[in-house]
Image 1 (spheres, rainbow, N blue to C red):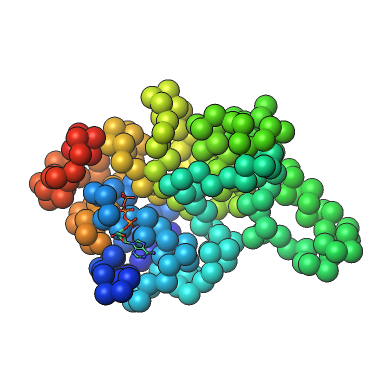
Image 2 (cartoon, rainbow, N blue to C red):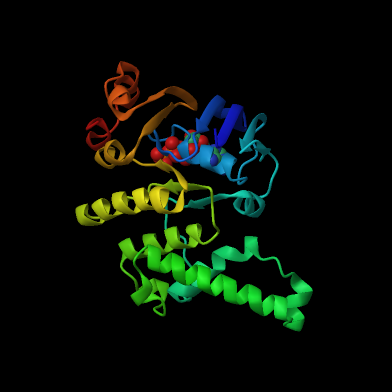
Length: 258
Ligand SMILES: Nc1ncnc2c1ncn2[C@@H]1O[C@H](COP(=O)(O)OP(=O)(O)OP(=O)(O)O)[C@@H](O)[C@H]1O
């Protein structure tokens, strides 16, 4: 198991958000985390990445404990993420946005930066080249010098993915990557996710409400409801599970179209 959560519980002011969650992602897998609104999916991402600190439980990546680590340390240890709402520096270029993601890997140190030592210049060069390669990987080389804010929404989402990839993760967490995309862009997203796994060997865990995309891209699906993992398995098995259909009752039509 690449990522492993054991008995993870999180609550806010007595309100249980995650309830003794046992959860894992196998190496090399494309996995989805689904569940009705408010089930706790984003909160699960937040505890994995160190944004939230659970009251109970253990989290590890390749056997290395992640609990009580700060978000940038979790990134350095190999987990990158994108957010539900695009979070780019709008007044920076596309390339600068991708480069901005790599400070967690910076090795040269503050003194070297101030003195502009050769080690610092080599570091800058490495960050620049990694960023170019990641932009190329997501198909945005032609946009590298544009301001991020001037890009179409679908392209901004790809810049976020490039920025996450530039941190050289072992596991990539995508929070609703298809939100706001048209059907052509969704198809391209499926292909990009598959290439991320196949060409870069990065495992992918995504939260997504678009069930057709989830069924198409996932090898394994985990279902969260009211902070508990209610079932998991292949897309086929999960699709036909009465507990899943029950969990989604009362949700809007889009989510019921399982
Ligand atoms: N920082 C916080 N403080 C208080 N409550 C929170 C906090 N973060 C999350 N919650 C609560 O945790 C519950 C789960 O929210 P979460 O965003 O994890 O659900 P979700 O499954 O991602 O929902 P959606 O699909 O709508 O994005 C909600 O009731 C939410 O109000």
